[in-house]
Structure formats: C-alpha cells, structure tokens
Length: 338
Ligand code: ASP
View 1 (cartoon, protein in one colour):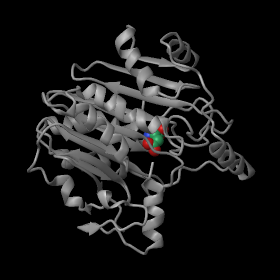
View 2: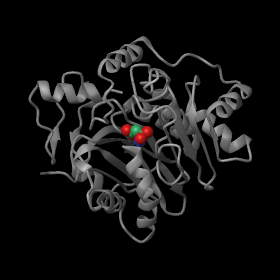
View 3: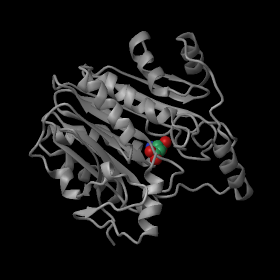
View 4: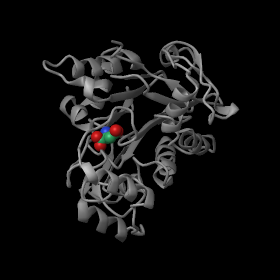
C-alpha cells in the first residue's frame, strides 16, 4: 500500500491535508494520481455512472485491476476478488496477505471474506501460509456448504483446492517483529501501518453489487486473535437491493457494533451512504467511556444508486474510488476534530 508514503510525504512537505479541497502534492504521488482531495466528494452523489469500484485506503493498483475486470464485462464478484488479490500479493503492504505483519509469536495469520449479489458469503479465519485468503473465502462460499472455515481446516481446504502453501513472513516483516519483541508492547497505532484492511465494493454494469475484504489483522496480536474482517455483518455486508459497506480499523470496536450491517440497514431506512457511515461511527464514539481517541475505525459504503460515502473517527482515512475513467483517492471526513 502506498498510504504510509502518502502520509510521510505529506508531513515532510508540510502539506496540510485539511478537510476541504486540497491538492495532494506528495513527492511520490504521480501526476496521474494527483487528484483533488475533497471530502465533499464523498457526498457528491450527482454522478453515479456504472461500473464503479471503491476501496479502503490508497490502493489505486487494486481499484484499477477491479475496474479492468468490470470494463471487460466481468461481474462485481470477480472484480472485488481480483482487486483484493493485488494487495495480497504486494509484499510491501504489511497489513494484507504476503508480507503481512505477524502475531506476537511470529505467525502471519489472515482473515478475509467475500459476499455476492445473492447474499451468499464465504470467509476464512486465522488462515496461515496461503497468500490469497480472499480467493479461499470465495471457494468456501462456492464449493462448500459452509460460510466460514478457520485455521488448519481452512488451510487444508485451500490446499485441496490447489492453493500452494508458502511462507508469508517476509524479511521486512520478520525484522519489524524482531524489533517489536525488544519491548513487546501491544498497541494498535492510529493510521500507522501496523494494521489496515483492504476492503473493496463494486457495482458492475448490470447494477449488481459485491464486496470483499482481506487483512493480516492487527500486528503483534495475541495468537488466535480474529478481527472484524472475516465476520459477515461486521467487516463487510452486501445487500444487493440496498447497498454495501466495508470496514477497517480496530476490529474489536467494529464487531461490538456490527458495523457494516448497521451501515446497510441505515441506508435501508433512507440514509445516504455518507450519513450511514457517520451514524455508525457515532455509535462507537458516543458509547459511555469510549476511548476512541486511542483507535481508528473507518467505513466506506455504496448504495444501489452508486452513491458513495466514507467516514472515520480520525483524520487520514481515505477511500480510493474508480468511476467514469477516474481513479482517485478521496480523503475521508472524520469525527475527531478536537
Ligand atoms: N480491521 C482489521 C482487524 O481488526 C484491521 C484493520 O483494518 O486495521 O483485524
């Protein structure tokens, strides 16, 4: 993922990416990627031409892949799977797939899920040694009578489906883990890449919606820890009549509010995707004794009309959106402006 570079460069160049229309002027951003960062764009719902793809964070290669699938006449399900696979294979991204940061014992464990226009879904939990967790989740959906497979069973199923086992702990992630072990302090860090999920939602030319998400979860988590990302309704939810939502951030907080299902249900009640994401974040931050200052959660959503929204607790969450030939990063509005 390029998000960390994006943040680093923004601070180096002194560019304050304030809410409002601001040109992203970071050194490593190519001219093609220089786009207006306008949080009102999340609510600019006048153009809703199809197909369209949105994803959490700054993942333009992934959205480009998904759009390529859609433009070639592929369906939304193929698009979100192939889009997520781009980041799973990217060893430089340390929060997804190969190269993901390990748990505190040095094991890279992946969570992923996928959901189609019929409401079918599949997920894998605590999957080890298989890069493309999202594709295994799709196989669970399509080739088994189950929704969720975990751990060794998920791995053995993947192997039986032809996936090749491999070591997912890259030298860079091993080195980071070894440095972490010196102090061994466990703390999710807001907007620093010791966690992050790629979540992707697409609407194809037929107007059908699918979604997927994939993650290595929180870096240095307890062995066996599972986040929101493979939990249907928390990390992801799709209702082809209404819309879809996917989450990133501290999974425990998303699970406690069944966040993605909540966003879709709020859209069903008439809220726009933007309003629904904002309400779902307010359910987290307005809990009595919420320690929201210490963690990040972000949602992106799309409705059946192709209107989109994104919202987070803290600044620097962003959504990548590919529509009408434009692949752009949209800085998300956020709750904590104090
Ligand atoms: N939601 C993921 C988890 O809790 C991590 C993230 O998206 O930051 O495992």
